[in-house]
Image: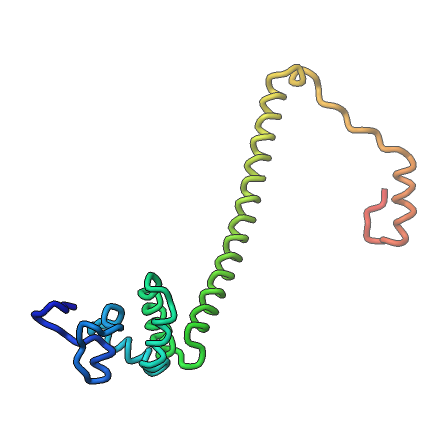
Length: 167
């Protein structure tokens, strides 16, 4: 907005109030004419006098952020008349929760794949060790002979489990 002459356009607040915007307008730096529709939304929610009170209550260094916040709240109320900014916050929270769950699932998959890879590497090391050491020259161990008690145990279970093959 050009305030030193030339094309002095009214700020959104003065435009809304249908008055001439002069050099002393408090809201001109924060609500330019190009954001008139956004200011209308904020005006419906707060009113010009409350916007002025809010802007005067904050430090000058925070006024631009305050103006942006007021405009954002007005736009949020226009889009969601019931929840406003709270609706946006709740939507963002649910998105964060969803993506945290997705991240946990991906981390679990990564842990599984890393475990598999580690097992593959260990098996490869064992195979290499078995092929290069003296174990390769020895014959494999014979299976342990079946003891008589084990066979009798199966015979005792056969009346209970009749479909098992009898020894």
